Image (cartoon, rainbow, N blue to C red):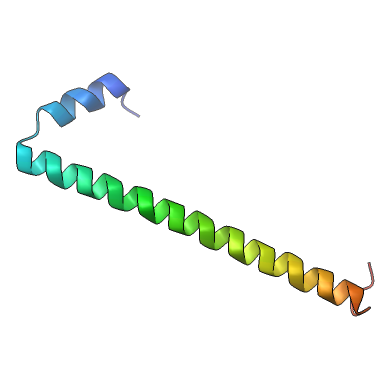
Length: 62
């Protein structure tokens, strides 16, 4: 993995259009990761809720 200084130098060597595309792509991936994390947490809560409901109803012998 390149060091932050190398990445900064690579970004500075890009043209204005390439830099804009890079920033848009970086923002897109950042938003995608946030959405993915939210989805994983939601499904995790769903699984915990289902297991808790099954245990309260006696369908799960824990």
